[in-house]
Length: 110
Image (cartoon, rainbow, N blue to C red):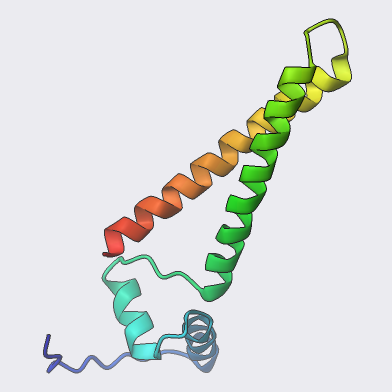
């Protein structure tokens, strides 16, 4: 795609600094970062990608832990295990929601 239109934007030094810092986090030029944001595209930093990888690992480990505890727990009154199972299930649900939204964002960019 040829880019032959130049857009001039006025901003304060603080705004420019913020724009520059955000572009740096994504390893994009200021122009590319601004273009993507103005067009409503999702812009993800390398830090976010690393965090999401870790969240996937944590979700996998939590799921395994949940499965083991579920097998051990026979429902016979240990409220601590029941509570841990319930909390783990909530966390897994939240992680699943976060990761599925992220995967949807990735597919929209491609």
